[in-house]
Length: 386
Image (cartoon, rainbow, N blue to C red; front, side, top):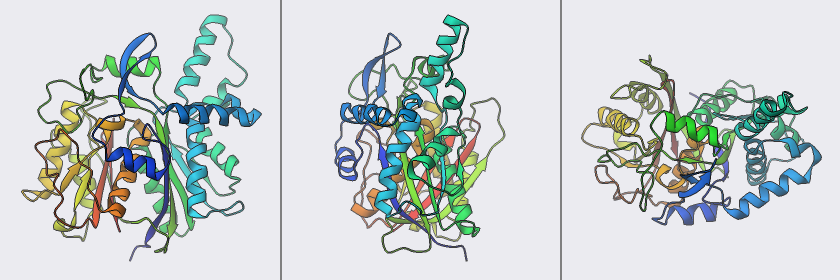
C-alpha cells in the first residue's frame, strides 16, 4: 500500500489575495479579477496582483540587498513559501525538500536584461544567475534556511502539479518525510503577451468576463494571463493537521502533431485521470477542477476527456481561470487550492456562465480531481480527499 501523503498547508498569492479568508471570499463572488490594463503600451486583459500585494513584493525586494536583483517570480515564491512553512509548523532547521517550478521563469528580468544588451552591447553583472530557472527553489531554500534538496523545473502549464508528483515520489520513496512543492509565475510582460497573441489564443473579449473558460458556446479563444504563486507542504502519513490527503496521482504525455497540439478527446488527460482514480469507483468522484485555459480547443478537448471517462454520470465541473487568468506554471497548484478549500468549506464554487456542465451541489464533497495540461501534450491529475 502506498504511503499516505498529507497536505498540511497551501499558501498562495494571486489576484484573489494572500490569505485563505481573502481567497475564499473572492471565490464566492461572481465577479472576475481580470481587467484591461496597459502592458507594453497596449491595453490587454490581465489578472494582476492587488496593489497591497504588489507593495509587499516591492518591500520584500528591498528587505535584503541580495533580493534586489531577483525576478518577481522568485519573490512571489519566497513570500508564499514563508506562509506555507509557518502554517505547517515547519521551523528553521527542519529538513525538507523543495520543488518549485515555473513555466517561464524570470520573464520580466530576462526581458529587461536583454533590452539593456541590445542598447549597450553589454550584459548586466547579475544577468545570468538571476535569470536561471533554478534560482526559484534555491532562493526559497536560502530564505527558509532549508538544508534539504531543492529542485526547479519547467513543464509548461502543468509545472506545479509535476512538482507535487515529485514531492509525493520522494516521500513514498522514503527519501524525505516533508516536501514543499508549487509553482510561481510573473508573465504579465510585453513579450509574453505578444507570444500568446501571435498564437491567436489571447482574449480580445470585452464585457463582464474577458476570459470565457468553460463556456462551450464561445466563438473565439479567450485565454488571459494572470500572475501569482502557490505552495503546498506535503508530509508523509495521515497528519491530524492535514487540510486534505493526496489519494491518487496520474500523469501522461501524448504524441504531438505540432508543438502546442492536443487531441480532440485529450488522450493524455484521459490517461492521467484514469491513473489518479485507479481502484476507486468513478461515482465517488464528486467534482473536477478543470485546467480549462479559455481556448476553444483546450476547453472542448478536456471536457470531452471527462465525458469519455465518466460517461453520462458527470461529477460537478468547475475552473478558476475565468476569475484569475492563466498563471502558467502556478496554475495547477492554484486549482488544487480551490479544490482543497471546497472540501473544507463543503461548498462547490461554480463558473457563473457555465451551462453545459453539472454545477449544482446535492451531496457532501469527499473526493475532488484536479487537472493540469500543458503545451507539449503533458497532463497531470491529482485526486484529493478529506
